[in-house]
Length: 228
Image 1: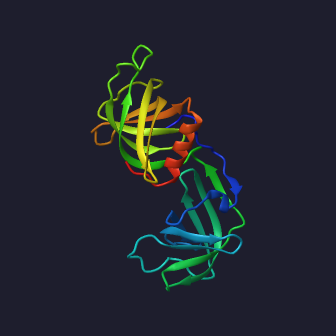
Image 2: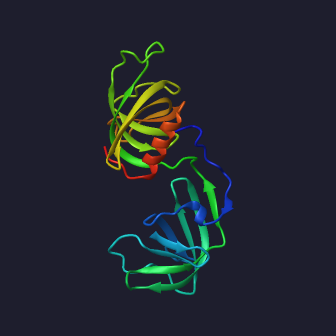
Image 3: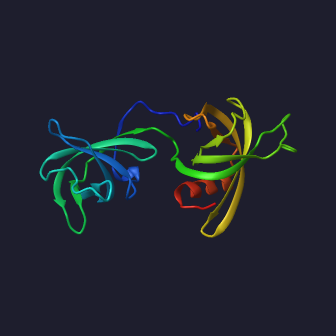
């Protein structure tokens, strides 16, 4: 992805609301007692200033792993921010489903990891590689887009295709709200690495010279379910 999506080493205090948590987002919880295990959990909802509802991750889980009256630490990743906060477990419930109600935190400790939210995808996509500064006559190359953000994309290809800094044209076609959309975006290679199983290469690219229409389309694609 884009080299502009650099990580920040500093944690800052933010409001929980500003993180934009979505129902079903994975969390990790642990009671603040010696030897307490970490529990894989998920976010359900929150009422600002009142409480936060979380539950176990997985339909087979029998409890939240939390105890009423104790303090717990909650950790998570939104796709942009790593975050954590301490909270008191107000109550646990078995009905109508298993969940715990936590006290709404005054703030969360958050670290910006990516400037843009990445959306995982698995879309057949085509690219063209300009030759001698022109795209005319360049063949289309079939690749698979594996993630997308408003700043760039990651593709998987059969070969390395190019070196860091090389220019490419990425064609993205999708259907949003029953309307077809197709955009062609200028991009430059940020990194290229062989896949762990050596069946191809993962190529991260940053978008360049985006039009306002391109930005709107990308914003919609990364926040709204779309289909090929």
